[in-house]
Length: 233
Image (cartoon, rainbow, N blue to C red; front, side, top):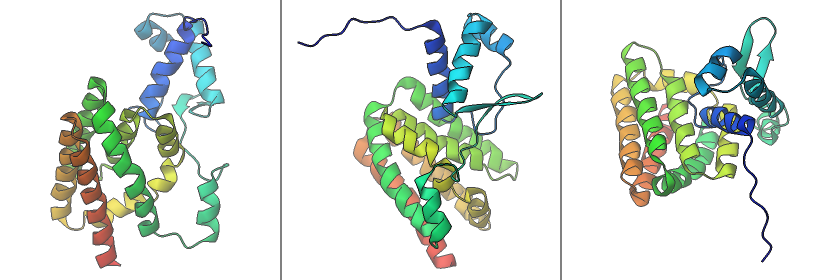
């Protein structure tokens, strides 16, 4: 047997993984500012040097960025920088229907995997995103960030690094125009309740470890949005 020695993880690697997880599951959203090094070090009970090393690694990976005189922020994925889908968008007449078809394949499979693999914390993250979206739309806002966070949390719950990477790096393309699209959807107040109910249905299926139901609920959700836009345009 080809066995390798088990190496303990460095503390900075553990800090790195914690922050990366917050970004990948959508709890730390694109454009959001990270806590100062001093506060992070205090919360994690590690040295500032350890935190700095973890942050520098995340910056190198493109998940965080330093802004002079402002602090450290979660990067906003830019499809124009080395993203193969950006080329397609630049030369083809890509529509919201094209993007929803891609999401249909990615996210139905993600919901199925999440229902089998989600950990208790993943379930809490989904519930939190759902609650945040419901509270946001009650104020008259769109809730697009919470909507995206919900779908990102599902991807993280798959525990599949390729799925997570795809959703994170194609974030701005897969959710292209989500703010504009939600504003159209919300023209009909009934759609708000329908979308929130759909999210709750997906959440319940994942929380109850029901892969078939989770996949079906996600398919129903995205197909509803597809059909709505098809009728409108």
